[in-house]
Length: 552
Image (cartoon, rainbow, N blue to C red; front, top):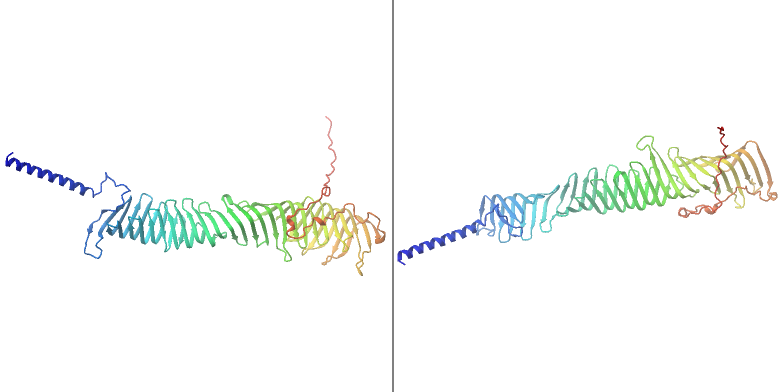
């Protein structure tokens, strides 16, 4: 090989080496620029600077590790993109401090804007400050200081924030939002506005997917135009306006309130209560206690059962207690001026008040005529008097009795002070008229029979026995319930001295004294003691004439 050939070979080899070096350098440089055809995998932990109008790196400045990016700055990290006006880019620590109009976007569902952000790529955490707005699907979280953890997909704020979910808005001092489950929790001075309801509490859990708020903590309150709910544990559905209240929550509506172990307000106006439910109507001065309650505010119908007790405290003297296995409420002409209600109490009804007691199988109260009707062996006691019949009707006037009717096999018995003798009246029908709650006049109509023991005023001894039969009799009483006079039509009467009373004449053949069935106190209404077999009234059927038919 000649010197010329060797020189050519050297030159060609040098060129080949240059080409190889240039190609390698070109590939290295090209690898640092983005390519639409080649996307980096999310497993890459590095933060990449995509674009900036100006990039400065001064190793002799006060911040030598930072690259200063200015003008339309854009970064990318693990599938997320960050834009800002300017930034400090720390490649060694894999972090960014962004300034100006900061915007962070992750996928198609999350966008965050603020005026300053400190992003750590190693821990995947962002500290966003000043006018922070986090938008996730339809939820918008606004605060002045937000910490976002991409690794666990949580957003925190500790200096006050507002979450807007459609028409629902929540405000609190401290909060946390999970972007995976879309559940949020708020603490301290929490307020939630949903439609016409305002929730005030110290702790609230909110599921944005279900629009379900869980109110926790003492002194929590849910307020609306119609009612106020005080609770420590409640679930509220902001879409359906349904609520579940626990922990002896109380709902107050003007003069009415209800409290129970658990209360449910569901669709179509239905409400349910379980566990020592107490309903109080201060306006009408009555209440209802039971272990299971259902009520529909649209139809005005409902029922109460399981140790159901009606209480009436309209009388200043004492409270009236009435118990039945089941109590049902029906409302007619609701939301009109002619509205009225019927209350059905059945079975094993027992009533107690210090001045009056009663038992029967069922009771119906009609507010249209203020009439309470007692069915199937009703018995009423007042002091030392007992009244029974097939049906007893009591007409009220402002919660006080104005008229009482005993229909069918009516029997009135009064026990004398010696507890051995009884004044007795039996008839087909009895009426008692009251003034200011005290009976002032009574009348017996149809087959009237009476046994009466006159009393000597001087020593209160019994004078004798007066037996009387008539068709109609009226008795007039004083305010002190003393007999003033008796009126009767044509009658037959016999007077027997006490020492000459014939055997079997001291009592009518229909006489009955059921003092052992009488409720003795408000707790005794739960203990049913019915008549013994054979003691119940047998209702006689009316005799009907046979139908006359023409022979064909």
